[in-house]
Image (cartoon, rainbow, N blue to C red; front, side, top):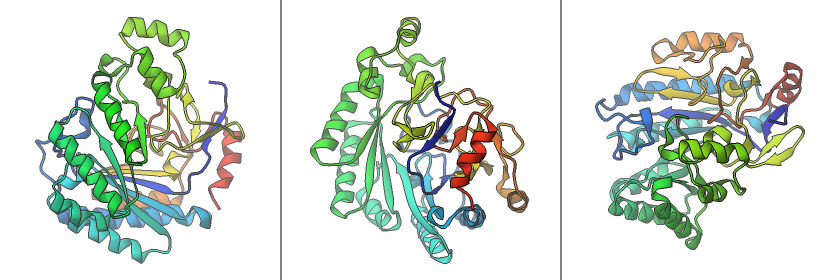
Length: 351
């Protein structure tokens, strides 16, 4: 890694990731702990209480930022959030809450869009932005339902983009979806599958790697690929989940960060992210890194002690120093290798 600072070229919002349920109507092999159909849906009462906490927490975070950064995005997902039987009530309450605060909020979702037409029609007025996650392991009928729902959003002028999960074993299906998006003028990104370094099922071959990164594998990747039967892009670098352009060392811009390893770096991830697991009640600063204010990997609290979380937040928190071996979600949070550099760049994001 040849740079000492990393920040997004344009990141104007506080991102709340709310895992509303772990139940899902798909069973993708790369999902890991992202779904669990043995668990019940959380109750609607608990879900609405969580929304109250989300707005209180975000209000404190945004009060510390300059006016042009006082915007939040609430991303509602699962499992599959639209699989929750009370999802419309939950979405309507969230829309109501955002009219009661002095800052702006958009409500988005990451959904597989395998949703029946009647429910889809009730949902779309209560979501501001849709990220459609396309999964090639779904059935042909489900994939056709996804395409029809995407076209429905387009005809109703709903902002969206499609995140095509580029499965190396279902590559042609993924490329077909990319081409369909192009033909229908649908915004999309071809996204590599994050995975454990020891799980070689989702490594890419040379041609797939070039397609995703725009460049040929380097020598170390080639050697590693021979050993692991494919190229693990997650270990060598990655793009931002939201496809943001990143800025290194006073704005040498890039869309693919080589060597996404920031162990020991000073990071503002807690100032840009909040992650809540409704089923367990765990509250984290971020979905993937999970770094907390005590310098450890773990939650900052639980939904059963939100008063303690709020007290800690309002009294002030220490800068997070990363302990993770690699960075996935949270890559776009401004960060620096040295504390003095971090103290300089963070001035852009606080008042």
